[in-house]
Image (cartoon, rainbow, N blue to C red; front, side, top):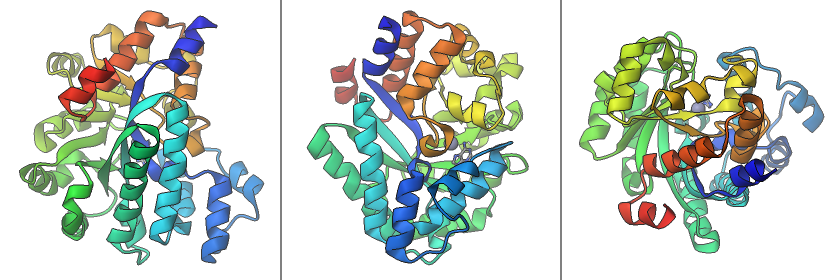
Length: 326
Ligand code: ADE
Ligand code: ZN
């Protein structure tokens, strides 16, 4: 249909993609073989059968197991190259890519292998395909703030290879304020700031992401609708929410996509965007998120244009790039 063609073809930015969540089962097994890593699954089909999630934690356990095959700079390059090729097909003109260094440094992988492999894939994609991309380093919130500070120090020799920091992993029990000091240090370093908040967690976590961490965007943020004063704050300050519909469905935040609250977020004047989160695990890349969400909720062309414009506006690209895209 014309609407589905519009959703697929319109230029868009992807602002919420965990690069480790783009690892397809086939690439997991290829890297396991190449690196002689033992996996607790017999084959691709057995791994895919394990993708039956009940909540965020049940996903994270499998996601960290999948990432265990990444050892060398070339592995990180191959993973990001595959994602960026796929994003170009979905008419993504700008990608801001999360990575979880602590998942890798904890296994003895050097920080430089992680960042240099991802960085090279970004620069080559810009050269080969014209997509604009940058990296955002995420701290794992189930670990301590001391460990986040060590991670930041390890990344400082490569400070020019990422544009910002984020906060991800298990949300409940790990509120943003646990990371107040490390985010203050990142702000002083001129890094852009985002955090996951209000995926499974309460509106209070979104408030503290804004007030304590001083983030510029909120990742997920779908629980904001429970708090009218918070909705007003997000709308007035034009704080973008990077919403991930298929992720929310698969992790049982909105078990039925028809009940997803993205139409209401837009109706409330919020700067909502559509993103894939972990496309290899949740059944689709960014265009699949758009197509399935629109098919389930009955939104139309007006909302499609609004979401594409929101994503480009909320990106951390320069003003000249944004002007060229819009
Ligand atoms: N890491 C990868 N995907 C995530 C998500 N949806 N929430 C929190 N941490 C994540
Ligand atoms: Zn996420």
